[in-house]
Amino acid sequence: MPAALAKNILKLAQNGLDWLLPPLCPATGQEVDAHGTVAYDYWASLRFIRKPYCSQCALPFPHDLGGVQPEGLICAACMEYPPTFRRARAALIYDDASRKIILRYKSGDQLQAVRAFVPWMREAGADVLAEADVLVPVPLHRFRLLRRRYNQSALLAQRLGRPVCVDALERIKRTVPQGSLSRKERDKNVRGAFRVNPARVGQIAGKTVLLVDDVFTTGATLNACADALYKAGAAAVDVLAIARVPKD
Image 1 (spheres, rainbow, N blue to C red):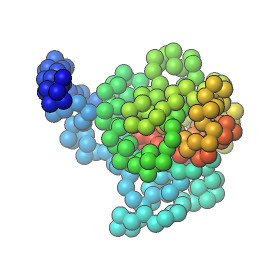
Image 2: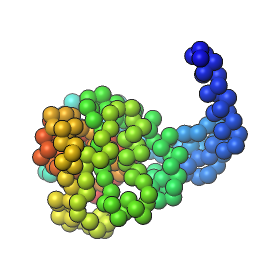
Image 3: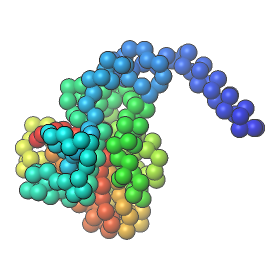
């Protein structure tokens, strides 16, 4: 089949799907122009992370440097508590606006939100994506996976356009929710909670690994995952998330 004909057939099929299932904003439920987009008013409420930000944890700095990102610019928290991973990138500030779409994605079965998140993450993480040999999603414990039915981080990783090893990391310890814990409590809660799947060590050893997650909070979970990957021989571990909590 000629490529032009195949393209036209695909376009007709997509138009038919859009007619049957009108594209809706995954955050507000409003009808939008195309799948993978959000309502204009909602878009205006989102705060995208822009330069300057911490080169290690993607924490935005309060002062505008004219869009310049000085090399090696590190925040005070990373100086005091250096992360286990090398670099992190995130698309959004985690606030009331971004929380709405992320929670609907994680717990409300709004899986079409992936189509909005992926372009944002590709732009925010262009440098870490370019260097990644393999993408590894942060895993859920099997009981939580059974309840939720899907791993939100794995769905993101599979659409970012790089090789993915979905089951490279295993969560071997059931942890309590991190939301109300302090930094030290979070670190203790996830210590030893992850390991690299023995069958996947060959896909990790010597590789630059990009950890994919939905929200970067204090980094305790990401540090624990990075530690497990380094123990399995990873050459470097970076992080890419949808959103970054601005403060602990």
